[in-house]
Length: 387
Image (cartoon, rainbow, N blue to C red; front, side, top):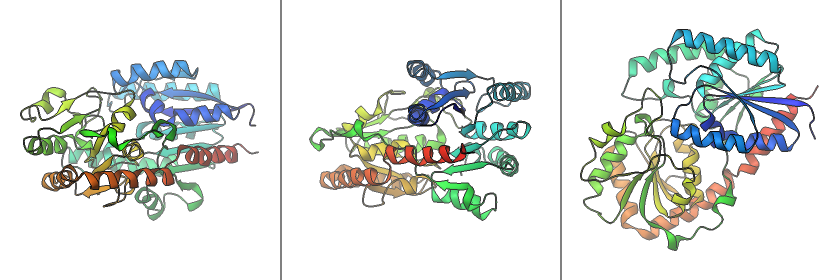
């Protein structure tokens, strides 16, 4: 067992840490590491409040600094960099594990001024800047230009390792000569805990189609609502449900009031953020995420574990999260009619839904078991902390 070795996770929000990295932190603690967390300000108050309760329950030391993931206040950003430098210098960890875009860039930059022993960067997608979208294109391209410069800068360290979640992101780093093969690994997603999905019954499946994400334009919320507007009058006994936070701070955020303006005749039910979305997946037949870009969407991996048929977009991250025409359908991004057609096929064919659901359970178990993910990352930690 490892003793007296410290890992600091630096992540944009507590909520993201709890939803995607808490099992890893707990496994590290179980194997003898000391674990602490540093984050910026909340992205969503509703998500953060719940995550703080879970963090306290698991007795993980937590420090918050000033930055916001979508913030552009220069004074606040410089203050955040100074706060981060001071915390990391005092705590002097053996490994700094950074995840989520702004934490990666800020952490990687600050570590140039510290004698950091080892750095781990986890890319669960590339965030707002690298998402191909028709909205805010000039702003995205500007941020992308800056980001590419900083990517090369932050990786200039003698002991780094990068984790990506899909082949496209892996090839990006290698093709651009940003990283060597020895510095990067593909680990598909944050893992699925199958103990939460050991009682799946297709008899309990109801006529529900779920959008399981924060309410962001980049997640495809407009496309989902527009598809629901078309399908709900034809299939009134089906429910179209949005299960995700509305109060998330992001350049592609859209308010409840704005999205309700395009909802026709109560075609969509809005549940907000759910703490145990697995309970909803277990009783749902279809999960739909028409996103513009992902790393490896955890919601789709869990949806398949729950036996849901999936409809998602043929974009980076999403295309590797399912098996097209075996566990779900891939459609083109922004393609409302294609989305409607795929959903309609599943609505009309119960046998097809169940076949996709059964294949999805097998696919998820074979490729996304959280035990495999944890072992891979823990082996990396052990390697990086060797003298």
